[in-house]
Length: 433
View 1 (cartoon, rainbow, N blue to C red):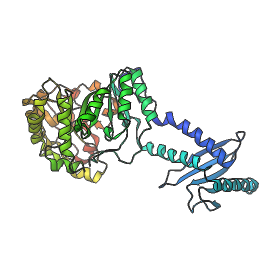
View 2 (cartoon, rainbow, N blue to C red):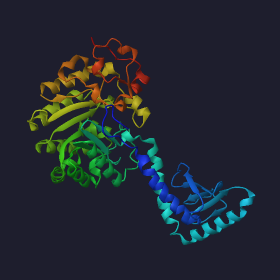
View 3 (cartoon, rainbow, N blue to C red):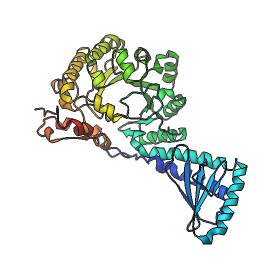
View 4 (cartoon, one colour):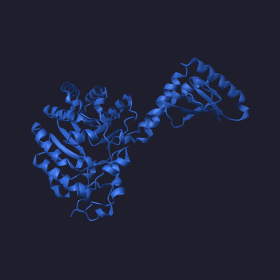
């Protein structure tokens, strides 16, 4: 993956880097289990995993196929042991080889520990299969002078508008270190750690130290719950924490705890924001706009101005932006909660006016934000969007429908989400003179 601009750095896809290593290790373990010498060709593939079962089809020599299942189930009937099941495919001329392999697998199965390394490798391989629905860009990004790395998908909240699945596998720490090295070599000076929730990972402090040793300052994309612990925040600062992008969706604890599916966490997020600001670090607040949070946006703005602005005396230390959600993990819920632009516009604009009058810098548009026509009445309150700063991947989920024709601000607008157009068409899309 490359950014939209020409850079000296090019991402190598995650799977392409790791797959040959795992493939070689599984091949070695297979040769051990089957007793296939190095002089005989051995290739293999896995079927997509079902539950905890792993089906692997190995081709021995030119054509003979061996089917193994770890752990065993009733589906491999030729031989089913305690640790592995065995099947085969070939002609009657291969009976001698079949019998040899059957005896070999039976002997290995009795030993148990001989199968264990293969089982462990296949369990790891199963996770690489799971990565296939994730794009490399969802794990890491690079932009001019900085980058973002996702540590995994574990989180102490489970926001209903999040696209992530909590049980997606996490990148191994060795891979994360490689990515940090890649970013450092590319000239990055700012690295944002994201998740899930990055503070849920015990390796975070070590990774931040590793990044600091390579000349990069660290930011966190976080819900700030863990940052309410002043001692932990101090440890983060010692390893290079330079700022935080904090999700803050509502001033109403009941609404916030409902959309985050984590009762009691709103108060800790508020305390975390206060602690980061008191520590003198910059904070970029972010609110996802959907039907449950929309009506409370003006009150959210008033809360930010009254509660957090006094703690941020430095110019630009406190900023705010909207997030316009893509399809939720649960599409039915997304259809229920998605708000048409014409319905959202008055409340978005009121919110921005309150923040601006309270001397809080706002960024309502961009890769995750709204099209400009959603805040057309207040576009003089924030700097124009530099489209050149967005990558091709940022713009891929967006489009300019016919309703955008003649808009005088198109060169500063990232367009409309295609998912929105699929549901609402051009509703609320109004060209700006």
